[in-house]
Image 1 (cartoon, one colour):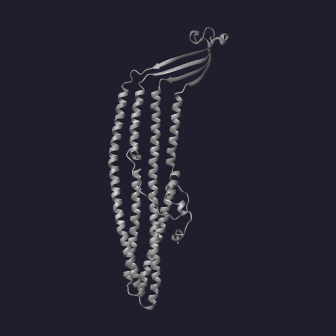
Image 2 (cartoon, one colour):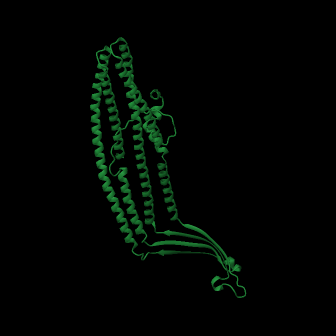
Image 3 (cartoon, helix red, strand yellow):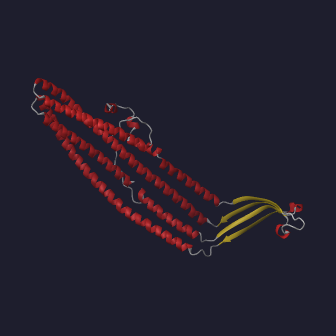
Length: 406
């Protein structure tokens, strides 16, 4: 049976198929996370490119031109000088722009921080999805193991009952009732085996794993992480970054209305008389000033646009804060309730196991009806099934709580 193969002691399964290993593989293989990492790297290059534009910009220009005049037909010499030869090296740089540079660098820094936060949020969401799928797969194999234990017990009783039937203590119909129960459990286990294969395959899909082999998953250990402060929360950090970006854009708008000063210099050859070519090497240098005067009141309009963005940001943040607090409160209440029910369930299982053990002894002595014994086994099956569900449900809730605590 497939379940028997899963129960074989695999030396490496706990190392290679733990929840942590699947999370690690999922993060490494996820294309969205790779895309965000590449965007972060690309943004750093954009920052370096912008930094390079503030350095002196050097260009070389060359031109050779001849404008012939034939029979008094041609361009006026006053305009063209008839011919021209030019080769110059030009240098240009904006100066007195330290504050503008700082604002632009801050803009790129915030963009990088935003991308990094988006990547961290995506990692958090992926971890949650992988953990939930791991728990779904684990619950199937865990329940199959419990039912396998009950099946083994029932098969032992089947052999004993067969002996009692031959001696005339029990009827053939009693034996058939046990046989039906065995068949039912075997069918349930096969269904759980199929379900496990399916959920295990889904886990590989989420993690980007191409391996088609099926391994036994271990019990995940999920502990509640300490809740981050609002300032450090990945969810609220997004709103903080958005606010800083709006402030930075406002500073960039202000910088557009500051005067800009450039220095420039040319050096090389400009000549229109080849005979005097050696005399026309020279240099020039100077400075330029640009000051915006009127642009149709664009600054005020841009301010209004940013103000609208800030109001939108604040509305989203306030609404999210309400949802966030309510979600965590509900999850913690649900977790406490599930843990309380799980404790009651454990007490019930202990009592039912005692009942089954006593009734088994009575069955073996021929003083108990098969119907009563089957009912006790069904009670044990139902109780253990419920216990598995409580255990897995608590892990699901912890997974959700940890997601919001990041």
